[in-house]
Image (tube, rainbow, N blue to C red; front, top):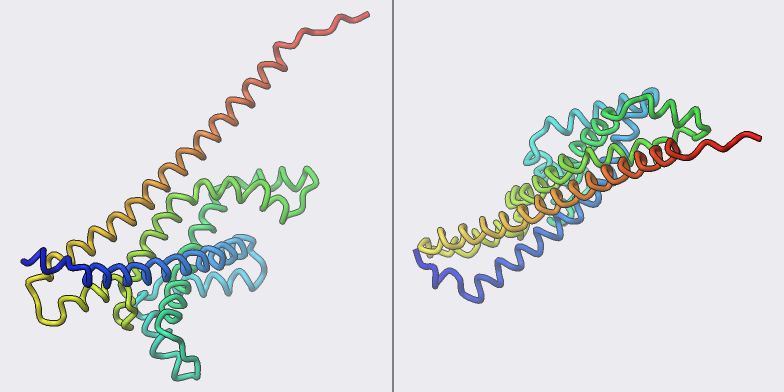
Length: 243
C-alpha cells in the first residue's frame, strides 16, 4: 500500500470532481423524486377512480425492478426509440424514476397512518378535501415520514455509485480511474478514502434527520403543553357572580 502516492493533489482533485458530480446528481434526483413521489403518493391515497389504480400498478412495478436495470434502460434502451440522453441526465432520470416510486409508497403510508376521523372532522368544520389534506393531514403525516424519507435519500446518494455502469464520472468512477492505470498499490488507500467520504456525507444526513425529528417532537410536546395550560386556565377561571 502506498498512501503517500495515493493522496497526491492530482488524485484528490480528481476524487473531488467525482464527488461534485455525485452530489449534483443526488440533489437533483432527491428534489425531483420528492416532488413526483409526493404527488403520486397523495393521488394514490385519494383513491380517485381508475387513476389511483394506474398509479398503484406503476409504483409497484417500478419498486420491484432493480435500479441497475432502470439505469440501463434510460441510457441504453431509450436511444433505440429516439430518446438519447446525456450520461448525467440519464442517471438523474433513472434515479428519479426509481426513487419517486419508493417515496410515493412512503408518502401513502404516512397518510394512511393518520386516522380518517381527522379528515371527517376537517370536512365537518367546513374545509374542502384539499384544504383538509393540506392543513391537517399532510403536516402530521410529514413528521412521521421524515425518518423513512431521510433513509431513502441516503440510499439514493449511495445508489449514485451504481451509475458507474453507464460511465457516469461520479465519485466511485473516478476512484476506479485513479488505480486502473496499473498502480494497484494505491487501491486500498483510494477506496478507503472513498468509503470515508460516503460515510461522512451519509452520517451527516442521519444526524440532521435525528435533529429535525427531535425538533418536531419537541414542538409537538410544547404544543400539547400549551393546550393543557390553556385548558387549566379556563378551568381555574372564577365563576362570575350572578346578579
